[in-house]
Amino acid sequence: MIKNKELLYHLVALFTVSVWGTTYVASKVLITNGLSPAQIFTLRFIIAYSLMLAMFHKKLLADNIRDELLFAALGITGGSMYFLTENTALGVSTATNVSLIVCSCPLVASILISIIYKSEHFKRMQILGSLIALAGMATVVLNGHFVLHLSPIGDALAFGACLCWAFYSVLMKKVSNRYSSAFITRKTFFYGLVTILPYYIVKPDFPSLQLLMRQDVLANLLFLGCVASMLCYLLWTWCINKLGVVKASNWIYFNPITTIIFAWIVLGEEITVYFISGAALILVGMYIADRKA
Image 1 (tube, rainbow, N blue to C red):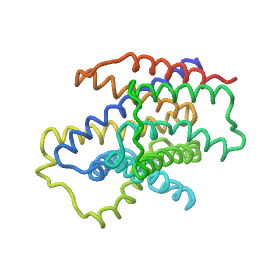
Image 2: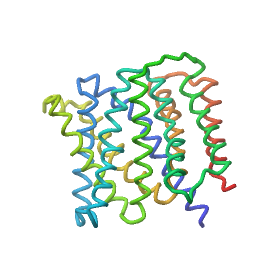
Image 3: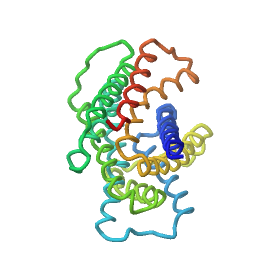
Image 4: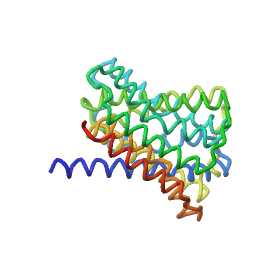
């Protein structure tokens, strides 16, 4: 029974990461229609927060000021700052560099947890598995074309996004046992929106209602807001609570795989031997990292 439950948690984590792997296509459609990355983030979080508030509104505040500040930090690291640094990095550095750096966040999160929580030291199998999965992720992303393009500013922003998500995972560990997944998710959306507001003081621009009502724009915004944000953040919080930060975060290595599979189905892009080899390495690495020894 316990093994069946853990399998369910892993499947939910896989589903969540798979959905996140398709968001690049939806975001690209919206950017093509004239929306900026910051506007896309704001709109998807407005949709997600509105839905969460409508369904889960009995408890509005945390139990104390300290926890309220923790939720504010979750909104920054898992919301506004993460998306701003990642999307800005994509405009400065190469997509390959950003993918490689951002998708290494499971390893960074594991290191942070081992430093902050002295009781959770890195085990040899976890280190080995993480490194194998990281090598597999790099194989998938590079796809046989190893060309190093250094972009100090862009790569630093990408690493900033990586650190944001790693800290988000660590902070999640602090609250996941004391608050419900729905409450945590709703507070994350709220503070993500609050902390993005200063951006609009610098760039006071927002898309017109006519643009937002276009069929393709509205459809992709609803997908990002309802599914990729509301549902997936809720499921991810639940998975972290059930699996732990390290086990759940390792599924992020799977993100490039789902992106390429989706591009293969929708755009007809080629599946190469590098993709198959990298995917195999990711799965082997995750299996090894999941072992207790």
